[in-house]
Image 1 (tube, one colour):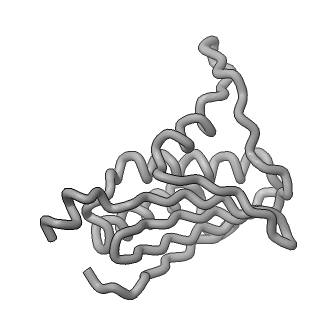
Image 2 (cartoon, rainbow, N blue to C red):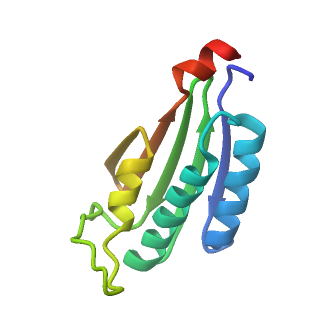
Length: 132
């Protein structure tokens, strides 16, 4: 894999969550075949859905691949950080943020002048690093 990072940007309102998942899947197959693609797609779907549900409606997806990392960033217009909720097994939700925290290697939320950035990072497993 090229040591230079690669970036894909998907933005609303021009794209929906399906477009974000499709762009992510294409990006992963080309630049990050080592990552658990299902886990990344779940995180992207959850972060985009949260941005659509809990903000003024716009969001921006950044995907960056380094030699041993994948970084997914979602910027949105809300300054409020995600809040974990008690999961509601009767259909009321509350699972998404917990899922994001478990599936990514690291998750950070950073304030921006126009809202916030949620950043999820995956590290290439050591066993895959030595095999390449």
